Length: 164
Image (cartoon, rainbow, N blue to C red; front, side, top):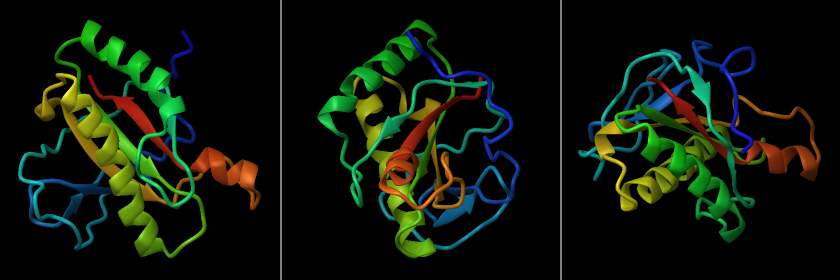
């Protein structure tokens, strides 16, 4: 089973570009310390988890301009779910990312929707909502630099970060 690895280098944590959504009162302070107004309605069940990521599980990829989970990503989701179920009480941060196309504002919202779709999938399979938070990075932290479909496809993703 190819799990991710330790978080470091390109993780972007503490880079000043984290945007989180929690508590129902708008964008809240994310990992990087920035704060923006935006979403909030209907998010009262979210929890802001603290702590630095210890490692990362497998990444889930999305189609262009989509936040729905792709059928071919189910195996990845199930591998990650199996790890979470074997480690009850683990705190999980789902980071939503986008490719460079679209405005920064649009991509921040799309990244949040991607992270939220993964969060809801986990909750629907029994993972406590209080153990999961979401952060959007929008287009700000590409996994692969470049301006091609191959690079963009790797940047449309949700990353599973394990906090504890």
